[in-house]
Amino acid sequence: MQIESLQRRWIVVLLAALLAACSGGGSAPATVSISGTGGTTGTNPGGTTVASTPSTPTPSAGFTALVLKARPAQFSGNQRCPPFLDYGTPSLGTDFLCRTGFAIGHDPRSRTPLWVIERIGLGSLNGGVARTDNFRADPDLLPGRRAELEDYSGSGYDRGHMAPAGNLTWSNQAMVESFYLSNIAPQNPALNRGAWARLEENIRNWVLERNDLVIITGPVFGMQDDVIGRSPVRVPQAFFKVVFDPVRREAVAFVYPNADPAINDLAAYRVPLDQLELTTGLALLSTRQ
Image 1 (cartoon, rainbow, N blue to C red):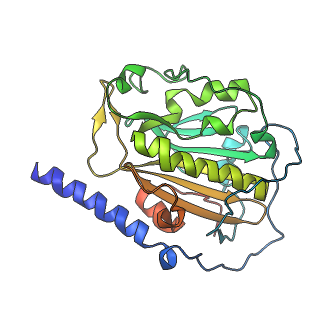
Image 2 (cartoon, rainbow, N blue to C red):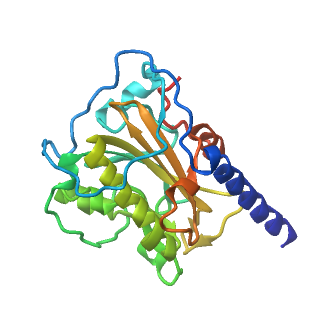
């Protein structure tokens, strides 16, 4: 019990250090120079271009400019899943799943995604597909390597989306796939229905402002985490989101503890991308220099 207490204290200190690393308590980080001719505008997953005027969106803030390089050759095999992997694959050696609206690196040990990548534009937000709430085990993963519905039953945790259903109203198939448990991790209900939902809403507002965004989402695990269910499914200590503007070549990253953080304080949970990579072991936006 003493060792477990020390390990939990370690992850709390680590998360606190990540959050404390935010520049100036929420001020925008410094901008670096850009090389090259600018970003590439990818095709909208919805396949449509929609003119839309934002009502009163929450302005995007804290984006830091990045210098990008050519994509390494080892990522070329994943070109079968465009446009989600145009800026690299966060990790190899996972169960790779290419979906209609996102790509997943799924970990059969934690039975959660390690990362999920979306690319959304204006056409992604103007569909009429209704939320299904039809959660199910991923049919493309073998039993024993995936979460099952009964793992979450009575656990006290929500089935938290990594690629949110609200981003996928443009496609019936994308909506169905968003409820596969390969896109889900155990999430504190207060976080899932509060601060996390607000962050997702803000990102959709930023799409209205910036037109095209790449989003990487995933869990942050500790040295020893709780588990739920018989499978079992590992419970993250926190969750991250990286939002990248491929046209302006700017990015911002957030880490939210798997608890009940303040809803409206985005700046308090903004973290440096490099430190997030060190914490998760992922190569996020790995084509940057």
